[in-house]
Image 1 (spheres, one colour):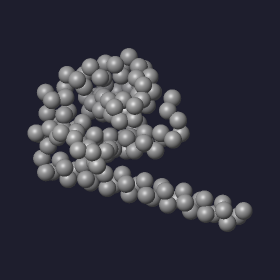
Image 2 (image 1 turned 60 degrees about the vertical axis):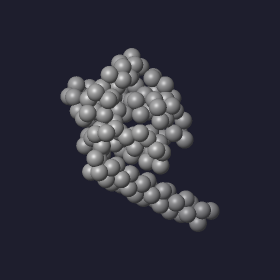
Image 3 (image 1 turned 180 degrees about the horizontal axis):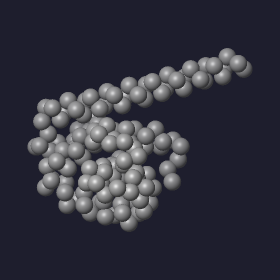
Amino acid sequence: MKTCNDLPNINRLYTIVCKTLSLTKEQLKSRSRKREYVEGRIIFANLALSMLHTSTLEAGYLVNRDHSSVVHYRKNHNEWYGTDKVYTRAFDLCRNAYEPQKEFILSKSLTIDDKLSVAYVTIKTLEEENKKLREEREQISTILNIL
């Protein structure tokens, strides 16, 4: 499994996918076969494989599935990406929100509103990370003051 050093990246990916697709982490990891949940799992697993360099076993664990489901997710992603405009846009939004500093070839289906959505999700994610880091810094300062 991924180390503790990868937890911030994993949590950031959960946040981005859930916010972009209007899902909760529980829905993403649920056993439900609702299309929006399944697409969320497929997007999350494929981003975990490509951005976090997880194995299929690790990606499956993160979405409460086994490795064979992730292999199937990869197959579905390869079939849907570029042909299903809604799926392609959702995947691009999540990918670009995760690593906005990299230049990706955006799908022609992305509009200015989509780009604004990516920026919004990125800002909200960074604000949450900033808040957590401030809290962590406060805890460390408190501990150091006690010593």
